[in-house]
Image 1 (cartoon, helix red, strand yellow):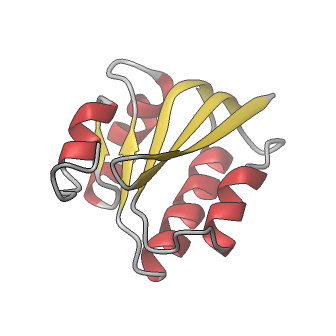
Image 2 (tube, rainbow, N blue to C red):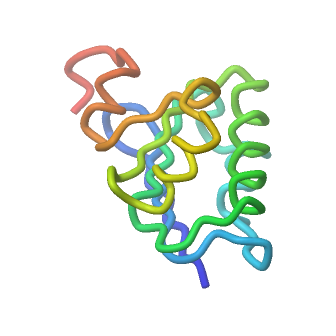
Length: 120
């Protein structure tokens, strides 16, 4: 089972938190909704995977396809995963940090977006 929460943050980005198991039986419909469009189509996306307990290769494919779709539409995307943790283990094993912009906490991920100051 997986839970996805999407929050428009006052600083000007979308925070997407994923909790649970991301595998072949999991669909991330809320993340798919971001890909199709939101009220702010240019807002950067921070995908927080720290709450993922199990991350399979099928889950990696799903997240990778989502990230590719977002970046193809010109959106900045940051991935957050805990070190140590199941997501980070696969990211490191598959060398995905070369493909994804990965951080170990949301604060650093947001800071790396270079959003204008004073947006709360």
